Image 1: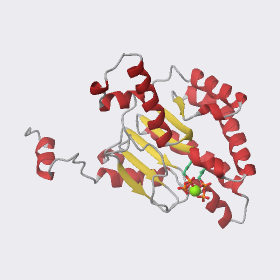
Image 2: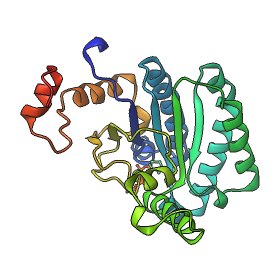
Image 3: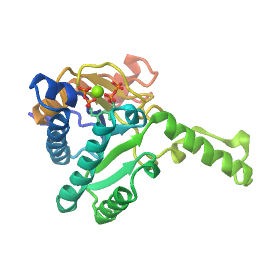
Image 4: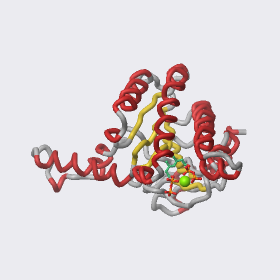
Amino acid sequence: MTDKLTIPRHIAIVMDGNGRWARAKHRPRLLGHKKGVEAVREIVKTCAKLNVECLSLFAFSSENWKRPEEEISNLMSLFMLALEREAKALARNNVRLQIIGDLSQFSEKLQQKIKQVEDLTADSDGLKLVVAANYGGRWDVTQATKSIAQKVVDKDLNIDDISEDDICESVSTYGIPDPDLFIRTGGEKRISNFLIWQMAYTELYFTDVLWPDFDANELNLAITDYSSRQRRFGKTSEQVLAEKNGEGE
Ligand code: IPE
Ligand code: IPE
Ligand code: MG
């Protein structure tokens, strides 16, 4: 069934709806987050099976520090636990983990754990799993701007030579293709400061399904929808069709 699908090289997901999933069951929000980790496991496995090159998951935004202290502390503990529990399975399944975001705000212990799991999976050449933690698209563009400004100050780069490529090479997803498909679960239709620079031409898919209920079948629906899109990148529909049929420009 999947053989007619166009598999995106890079899928980016805003995993939203854990809290509402729990509330609907009259259970604490933490349970929703725990179920959310299980959904992550299934989606990682499915993406690896489909030969998706890169899966990036928004786990904690720069803005999520505004949540109640107890929820933040629960999320940090859960992140630590998930890293501890999943590290070996990731390596075994040839998944390479990379965490992006301002990690300096995390505890020393969590930072060490992140480094440890990244190192453990560094030789994997299967699915690249990018987890965005204390990440914000505006933070990413800001830190890229700083590093470019430093190059100018150091006289390694002229202002007139600053190009889009320089920015691509300075944001935290350097080396990873831009997302082809963006998925947001939980019904909201917004990007919430995820990969704003990288998603200039990404296909957007929104579903009401809450993240803990998002499974392989739901992912398949998203990829099926994506497969029906015509990506034009500014060209006309006719041009794109002609190129597809091998007729050139
Ligand atoms: C997403 O679920 C997980 C994080 C932001 C960490 P939410 O916690 O935002 O769930 P809702 O939106 O309240 O349902
Ligand atoms: C976005 O979810 C961030 C993550 C999924 C980590 P939120 O639930 O925090 O998004 P907003 O603030 O409602 O847009
Ligand atoms: Mg939410």
